[in-house]
Image (cartoon, rainbow, N blue to C red; front, side, top):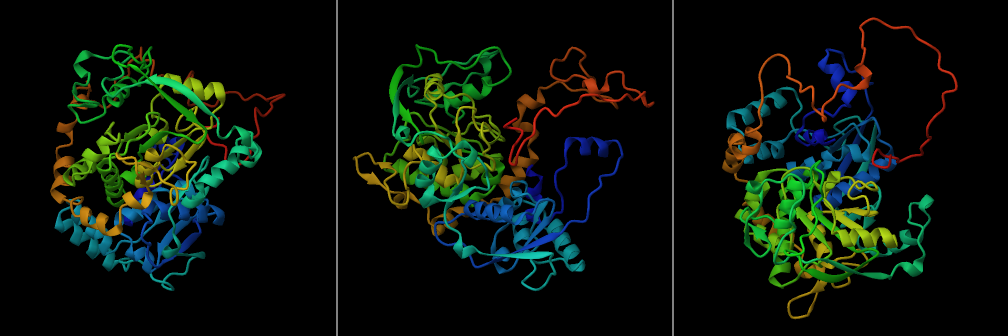
Length: 530
């Protein structure tokens, strides 16, 4: 689904399904109709306080309504030309969410600036410029340059901070309306997209006795070797600069007989209380946003300002940081921001897909038990691009997509039942109320710190020495040859029943009698639901 990110760099391409990929491997062509091309004319510029994430959520909402399924979308105009390559890639990445085959930006100087900043050789950059110029394709088209099937206009100056959810990525909610919208959905019928609960139940809270991990960690289950166990360095961090609880859990969240359960000796009990609208998972995750330095730097600045005020994330909030690349860790550390993210709980848990595809790991068992027993409508906040029901966590029913700095802010608030524009999101170490505007990252602050994000040598080093950074991968036994040596005893990779007794000759066909449909589904039913 993330293939379309390349469209932000002027590369035409999109993902295919498994059957299409298999057919291609066997030399079969892939057929598709010549699509309509929808032009999205971007004008103006983003206002103070808005991010690329806010922009892509607005575009997703707008293009879903425009029904661009099966179509190409090309972004053009002065607003598109002003966006940097990472903002364009953020928009292109979510093409599957707004339904298009791809969301395309042409190649221009901003594209080449990105290649230079990420360590590509100058000779390659010059070749790209020469090729696209010779083809008459260099530059972002302006209004009137191209005859599109249809044109949609969007003024970037109208983009406001927003989130999307709680069940679909196209359901955008202005940040100032999230509190009221959650209350409305709480008692709205399930058929109308709500939760069908009584409005009187909204304020209920339930006491939970959970694991206190500030001085210990959750001991692992499953087949964990002592050699790979994290070593506690101080407090809740290990020598690998990650949260010990998360580190053990990530190692053990595999197909093994046991789950990760608290060890009484290392995990003294602590009391808290949870209720509807509480944020139980806050995750900076997914390549959609973690590949964009501006929003990652903004998240670090919010964490820094919060940590300096002595603010704490409530005990019931499970926090995590899982960027898509080691480069993110490098520039956050170089900017001096990673230590503040660690301080408020956003420790590095790994690289790649985690919470955005449901790999958040379990919540504290006592919290999960309380959710199920009392049918609590709890929330997750994440910087991913999909939030279908049961995708993030099977027991968390309200999932909101938002920018990384907003993920940090809502983790501190601990609930979506606040208007974070008007209400305090927490208290400082002296008991004073702290508002979002007190810790928000300004555009100037982000631009200043962005200077540390782009270091061509960092990209060259991390991607040139990639093999040396993955000792576990290097230790995997592999063989060479024209055919893969399948393990006949493997329980993971097995011959599909479809191929049993398979023959190149057509067999005898027989009629089907009494066949019936198993189920008939409406719109917006995903594989997560099924």
